[in-house]
Image 1: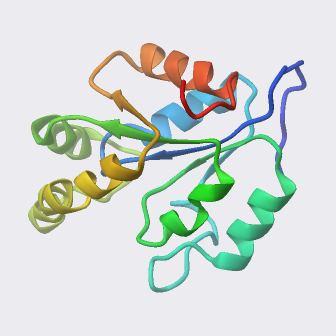
Image 2: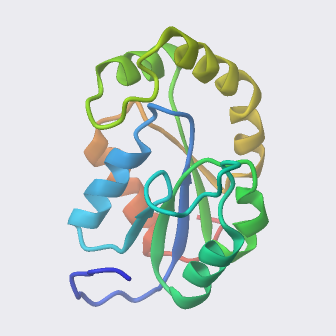
Length: 163
């Protein structure tokens, strides 16, 4: 399922990266993949159902088979899988940063319309507090990408949720 650069790791960790649109989940995932970690971006492929939920069978199989994986996504039923992750990482940034990022990005069209930007603003107010309440770690995604990825990589070396 994954092409992974082989390198010794003392700990095997399953980690979820979540957050609002434009916060940098895909960028962090891409960088972690380049560093040799197995990654899955649930915004792409068949991970979600037509209702926008994670597919229970696919996610169950992924998390059952993988002793080490970084998953990215934000869906309504992600909490159903939290017990299978060692860390649930919330990336966060102010709404002005999110809107600026979605307006400028070229890899994902979501957020380019006024209606989508209003939805992002609404979601940050209503969804992000729920994500914050259930995350094991929150990372300020206004930091340089390399610093954000370094912090996530620290978590990948430590399966203990108290880190």
